[in-house]
Length: 293
Image (cartoon, rainbow, N blue to C red; front, side, top):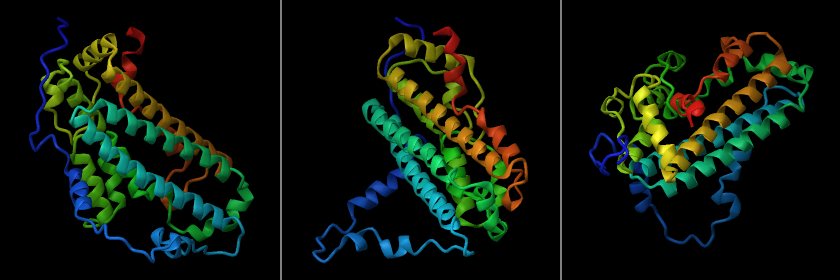
């Protein structure tokens, strides 16, 4: 018997189940009665969506800048929604559903990367023509992206200082940092599949940053040798990690070609800060074992 494998077990204790199961329960009681007069425009709230672009100048390219970033926020919202489902599938040891959800997240990331191509049709001078109207606003302040980073495992308390105490944004980021990350949930799937995950990794303080773990890496090697669905999930997690790094890279290059080394709006350091995030892996243990597979 593989020493890194043990009899399957799975816990439904409150600590492991996600608080995000609540929306599913709410959906079950949602109003599903027919609305014969419902139109395409009403269903999609197009009056609100198409009225949400409010340029602060007469410059032609400001509308593109606003639309691109609003679309990014919609994709971040969808990825957070999918990651909630992903963690639920992992905690319930449903590898098939987890693979399907990861596939969707990866497809969204590809679209997010492709959107940079559209934004790069705007020249530096075109951006400069309205940049001063942005005042203190900055993509650095995207609370949804900070929440997504936390869900995926980032634990950097410095990011919350950019949001007022008591604000919904700060509360969501704090909550995401206090819950198990996607990788923590993946370890639960391995336990349910019969792999011997070190107890200290399973019982760690999930509010603290993950650090590479030799014992977890040994377990992951056994997962790859077994070459069953947990190994497939691991590879899709590597795809997710690589996809986010690709998005970060395209983002920082777009910033460099647009404003060079100048500071970003909102007091951020611009490209200098963005470069520091490009090579930070979400799941370091999955990368650390590459030379031993």
